[in-house]
Image (cartoon, rainbow, N blue to C red; front, top):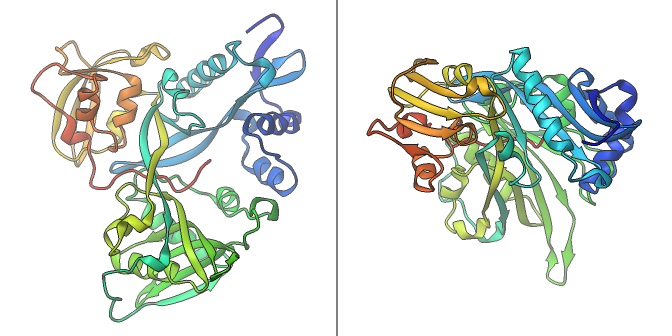
Length: 407
């Protein structure tokens, strides 16, 4: 890293300089209310800085949250605020930060996995993070699509209001849906405030956020959060509805919420950037091309404690397989592991038996949430299937993993 450069734990007094650093890296100003909200979730005790004679030249932090994985909810280090000053690039700072951070997570022993979003897809696989969940971004011409399913009978009731006012219902519904949605992160009060942050300088000319809750005969069954951006052209109204989040406990509620969002008056487009690749909306409309869907990577998963991570999730079918894994950063994960389990649970332990499949920890992380197929990785030459004992089906899940927030 160079003479005088050192890694050290973050301190409270470092926060303004860290915000400046992240502003340089991501080309945005972190100030005012945004800065206050970032400070509220920032975990100084899990912050790492690269200090160059008093200058904060690099930073990374791990947030203590939960993540839904196939059949379970696990503690997961949520990695964020990673960056290096433009003046200090190509000196090994990022590598040093990532290695140190992974070592600390492993040593603490609380979180078997780590998860992050990548600003560029090529950055984090070299540290063992595999692309485990994709997102489907919609840019919908809402006046050119029609929902093919009729409204439910009897119809539910919609209540509209400020998200903070409706948060009691929204947070309960989120937790109810999250239990079965792989890739969704846990949210305590701090994280709800962060997710619902709505300072004017983040709106880009759009309205404040709105929320709608759907009530069924037995109580709330779903919600949506959105804002709108006023636009007019020579044809008339051309507003854009920007959907933040949709959660529903049943298909009828899901359809009702999207019927509402696609039918907002004076709007001509609806955007939704955090859809799942198997988003049911694709199969609810008569013109799916008008949804304007594009796929990109979302969550990257890193197995920190490999046996705990593999034993911590459930498997779609019975599995009894020996995996040979290579992990140059966390060598405790390297070796042969026998994974035995199924829909009810699993165990994973070291073994001397011959391997059925060989892979890197990066590619095992990519397959971990069930969204990246081991068979596809094998076809790409990323993993090696050594015997006929193929665990591909077991690693899948009934729904594709998705992400509800960028952290």
